[in-house]
Length: 261
Ligand SMILES: [Zn+2]
Image (cartoon, rainbow, N blue to C red; front, side, top):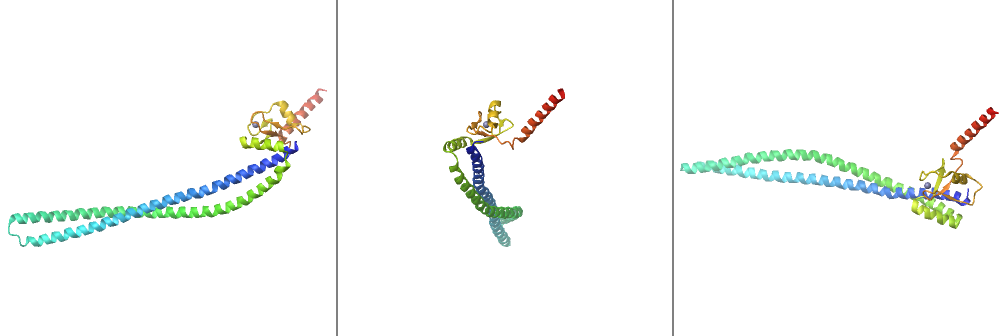
């Protein structure tokens, strides 16, 4: 194998690892932000319930005052009944008393309805408080673990970067610029040839090219995948199953030849 290619295989491993760490680090605060958004939404919901509860309280206080007023008015009108002199006056007073009493019973019904709503709101408030506590706990946990993970990943990334910085100058200038160019457009610059296929794009490598790739003495040439343009490399240890299969076929062929002799 071309010596630069060997180093570039290591470099690609470092590049992929550096990218993974960086992506993970970028994703971590997003999770915390998501949980924070959910916490804020839950808090808003709780505040809305509390506001509705306060409105019901205010409404009932006003209803109670109105009830009191109507009671007092009815009592005053009844006293007036003692001193009326005409039937017309009595009828008018009775009419007013009936109206005040009807208002009292209407307001009492409305007050009961408000109390029922309050009961439902209280239940909702308990559930909303649990939700807020839940999100607050999850958010705090995520924030703490994110801080730890960011520190850990940061240290790992620094190690990988140091190794990259050490390795890159050891690679030939042309090979390295080719590596960077392909990596920039394809994400990765190298692809392992396995089972006569480019493992990155899965396209078959033509037999002659495959043989050239496997030809160990051909150290000076680097092969690219004709389909995706990545630099191909071949690892005999990794492609062993096929090799074994080939050996098996050879030995079968040999035994057939032997048998026919
Ligand atoms: Zn390919």
